[in-house]
Length: 513
Ligand code: KIV
Ligand code: ZN
Image (cartoon, rainbow, N blue to C red):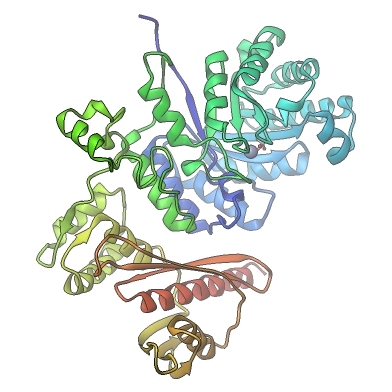
């Protein structure tokens, strides 16, 4: 039997993933994801683009200082300022810090975006890698839009950057244009025509514009690529990036043909997917492979019968292998603190004592209102109680009257910067009335970009989960979330959560001035 080769998993959820519309995260949120990526056991996590903003710089620095179980990459364009700034943030990770420098190599990008000749791009790439290699031996070079690059030039630039010290060379399909056979041929061409290719790891980075990111990445692996760049839930620019869970589970499930291993702790896939959705508010489509709500649901009678007789009839991988447990009743009103803490740990949460206490109080209140508490309820409690920002505004109590007869009216009492305030306001509907009351009490009026409501579990006593997206004065989008058995209260909490995030951003800006 042939020896199985390991594929390096390079996760870019915190960099390319964060470039998804509406997926921006603050430092605490990024750190939480980074801890989860560490539990997932990714080999490399790209923590951000340090020169892009002070927030990005701080996030990369904090992750480099904190995370010990993975290499930490930071992106930089091919110029000295970017590279120096990247290393300033990454240096805390020592040899695990990776400078990832890139420049576009396709005719179309060089002509219209960079306005540079092939020679100028080649020189800039070599200079960038040389400078990065002066800081660390862990240097990755990406030829942006490699797939639309003239192959002889691609081979020339890859040869030159390896010579200059790049230890990983990435061949991105930046615009999601290639198909598996073509990508296989490009990687094969480089293996044949780059004389020093054995001195570097070939990496692939695929976007999903044609829905082929995973297929293309796997074709490249079959041609000799040994690093795969991907994101949780496949989030990323436009149609997203190669989905980590789909690529990894394909490698694992089809070991008969794809004789490769990864270091991924696959049972952490579901907790990773859920945490990312909770933090970004970007829900996974129900029919998404691996992590969609229906991915393991056998609806049709004939399928259910088959699975009951023998799971392998319709199940090509087990739900347990991706950390999916049955949607079971986990805790109830009489459950104690130990059972609660154990369950949170099983779900992948690593909380401080203070956070556990907050979540436990909230759990007890919920258990009084709702007979059955499911894993999803615990996820919502953690998201609502623990992942929240400092509370400039707090909901104390509220009451809403609505129906088909009288005008909906919300009476809301809040703590606004330490002062108790109350008002009653009419609106077009109960949510509108509640939001108007909150705006009046807080003296704010940010544009509402999006409002969504969902039920966390089935049943009429299910908790409602609401998301509110607001835009602050500098145009930054902020997502607020709230959960409560009363959907109007959940909406108000989500709105207030978004206001608190905006207040936090303003505070942080003041601190840095
Ligand atoms: O898609 C792309 O080309 C990128 C590079 C910066 C690697 O994200
Ligand atoms: Zn990309």
